[in-house]
Image (cartoon, rainbow, N blue to C red):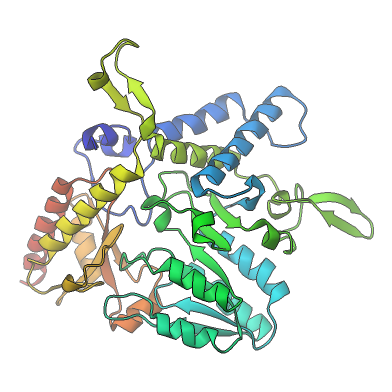
Amino acid sequence: MDIAFIRRQFPFLRASPPPVYLDSAAMAQVPDAVLNAMTQWEHSSRANVHRGMHARAEESTIAYEAARSTVQQFLNAKHSDEIVFTKSCTEAINLVARSWGETHLQENDAIVLSMLEHHSNIVPWMQLKDRKGIDVLWMDIDENGMPRMEDLEKHLKTGRVKIVSVTALSNVLGVTPDLQKIIALAHEAGALVLLDAAQAIAHMPLDVQKLDCDFLAFSGHKLYGPTGIGVLYGKRKLLETMPPFLGGGMMIREVHTEGFTPADLPAKFEAGTPPIAEAVGLGTAMEWLVAGCRLQVANSSHASSNQQRRTGILWDDIQPHEQSLLQHATCSLQQISGLHILGPTPDSQLLTHGCVSFTLDSVHPHDLTEILGRRSIALRAGHHCCMPLHKRLGIPASTRLSVGVYTTKEEIDACVQAIVEARKKLNT
């Protein structure tokens, strides 16, 4: 993969000198293709979607629905109306907790979460617990940070579990639970499964039909797309049983003085004016991400094959590149005295994705990242919206280094050297 070519497509990385950006797990940078698509919509097609009869309204509707079709194809969903646009992954999970949970869960029913979960996949269920009197049961983690299947099996045997909601990729430890096994066990017990794919969506292909998950949620800003856009995938048969999440325009079929009739899928879950430019940007980000089969010819349509450049990349490019980066980061960080890496043990042979988190003896993560930030090295410090996990690990906070398609080994090296120097400074 031509990293130099990839990096030139990101305005953020064209600064001189370029920043060392190792915080893609919080927010990935955006390529020119996405920015151009959104700008083009604003310049040429800005109009509200659906029902408008003028040309720009029709163009805007076509662009918006084309983005939905792109998401459908990206996830291999069976139907385009199984794709609901939201403002974030957080809102998508809240939609399920509110709309499905309120109507399908009764007192003494239970849901299962893992200790890896982000607060966005904890708090909505805790709120439901308070309203409905359900129980929230937990899957602990083993020494490698993987959810314990025996805990899930124990909970499912009670016959009370109605849904299992788990991350597809930990935003702290970088581990991927055994999703196929979790889904199979849950379905065998009559429970549904929601996957929080906020992190996984940018690091691995997710085929919802192959996985057979019931719901899947993610955001655009971790997928080289814009902020303010998220997606909920749900099986059509489930979404059809769920009442609207929000009320207002666009989500109705008709309104009269005695009540209203909701619209069909997916409109009934998309109240109000949707994030149109953001949807266009998200669709473009997905097209860019998997556009490795499309070639951009240099200078002339008669250019030779070695003068052709991919406009995007393939999963087969991404995963080896990121694995190499994380292995390099892990090996380099392990050489620092007093630094402790969180996650799988060295002899576990488990692959991690996206990030590596660590602590440094006698150095608070906030102090470390502040010093590195002054050198234009961007890491993330804190609990990463995973307080229960950090409490389980016996630490208040950690430092996280995360990678993207544009990350280089030279950036990893610069970061490691800066950590060594910062530690010396803080310990003097």
